[in-house]
Length: 165
View 1 (cartoon, helix red, strand yellow):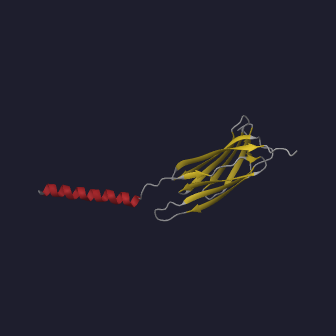
View 2 (cartoon, rainbow, N blue to C red):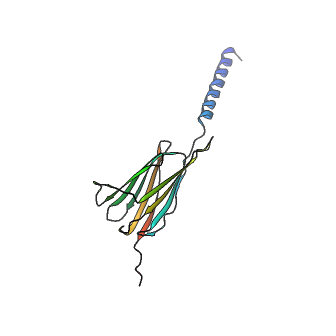
View 3 (cartoon, rainbow, N blue to C red):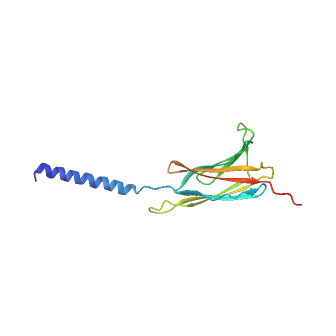
């Protein structure tokens, strides 16, 4: 083997070692898993509880609950990375949302360690108003994980309770 061939082989080997080292130090790809618990149909005026879970740390999120019928009714909560949140409700028009305090959002973080990305769990409790329009609703939660939006949603019904005879 000539001197030039030997130098090329050494340079190629060093380059390969550098690339493999860089990939090893960067860590493996981290897939984001997410889920939303099944939201049960509920009588208006009662409480709805559900959870949204993500692998990885959520830096911010948005919860939207909307009436899927003809009447516009949208509740939107903006959630910061520390779990603080503000909710508004738009009824009939999107032009004048009003502050809304009928939703409680609890944040539970598991920061993980090593190659474990940890997880973020949001426990959501909605005290539905007795004046709520019966019909189909959709809850959508979008969390920003590793700079990317990850969305989970579920549909459910709000029912008017039967009147006792």
